[in-house]
Image (cartoon, rainbow, N blue to C red; front, side, top):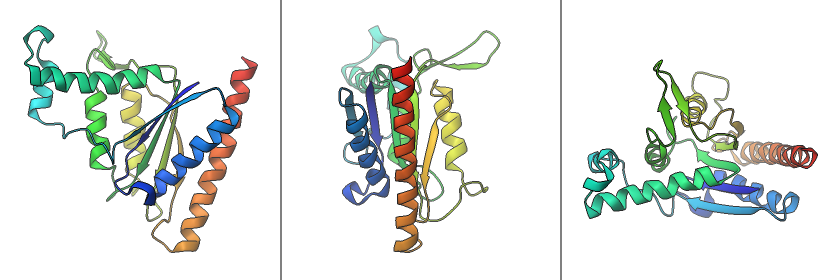
Length: 209
């Protein structure tokens, strides 16, 4: 199994979502010793803001692109290739002000490519093209919002990921990170337990196949 882990917190080692990702990676190395793990840290190495120049480069025919445009497209191509190459994709996403980090939004804009990661059918429906992946979202937030209208992250990510083919993501959510140490530790512990349950089950399915 090839696993791609996308980190998106700006807090580095102090990040709660990073803690969950580190736990998942450690667990993977136990249950899949022969697997490969690739980590991309958007907090430490963010993709540039998706601006007019970026959109222009992606929509310019390849033979007409300038050197600057070719560099922009090459970056997008690299990000997209990582997604297609992976068997399992893990997104570690903290909630900032009811939404996802800006650097993760830019990342999604870079990989949502018409004719590459999604297409429109003759009937006008969208079809995601990155298929047959196990998708896990590790989400952390300061308060508690899962199952309420305040949880705007979960439905957005479910829709956005499905748009490029990453359907049916499993959400592992740790809440209450800003509600005091006992609540935060309980939230992280529950999420780690969920990860431990999730990964052996996935390994058993592959062994039986």
